[in-house]
Picture 1 (cartoon, rainbow, N blue to C red):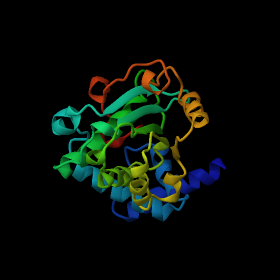
Picture 2: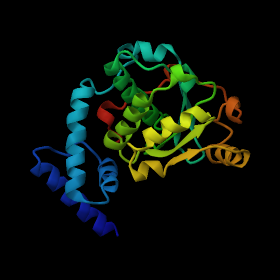
Picture 3: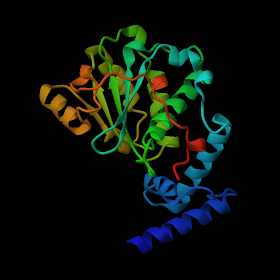
Picture 4: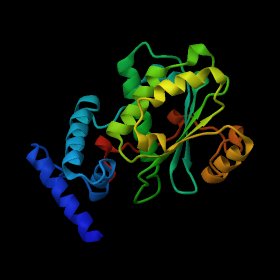
Length: 247
C-alpha cells in the first residue's frame, strides 16, 4: 500500500512538472489531499494542484489575507473559532443571522479565504503538526429573508471543493427554517457528492445529542449545548500559514 502511494505521488509530481509547475516546498501530506480529491488520478490531481497554485497567487498574493483586507465582513462578528474537537479538528461556527449579502464580492471572496485559512491554521496552535480537516457549523437560527445569501453559500462551498480539497470533515446545519429548504436545495445542486456526504442537517433531539457528543462539550459554546464561550474569529490569535501550506 505504501509503495502504491509513493508511486502515485511520484506520478503526480511528474505530471505537475509536465504542466510547467512545481511541487517544491509542499509536503507529501499536502499533495495527497489533491490525489485523494481526484480519486488518486495523478493527472487530474496535478491539474487541480496547478489551478490551485495559480488561484492562490492571484487571490492571496501576500500569502494570507489580513484582517485589514476584510473590515466590512469582520465587523458583523458572524464567524466564531472555538479550538479543536475531540478528533482534533478545528471548529468554525457561522451565525447566519448576522450575515447580509455582500455589496463587495471581491472582499467577500477574500473573507472566505481568510476564515478558512485561519481555521486551518488554528489546528497548529501549540502543536508541531496540525490536522488536515475542519468542522463547520452553519447556524440558521433567527434568520430572515434579508440574511439569505444563496450566492455566498455557493461561493463558500465551491472554494472548499476547488481550493481546499479534503479539508472539510463535516458541516453541521442547525435550526433550518422551512423557508430555507428551497434555498438549500438550490445550493446543494452546486455541491459534489463527496461534499454532500459531509453535510449533516440537525433536525431532532437525538441528532442534536449526537452532534454535541461528536464535537465535544469542551469547545462547543453554551448556546449549542456545550460549556465554552463563543470566540469571534478576529479575537482568536493564530499565526498565518503562508500560501496555504501545512508542511
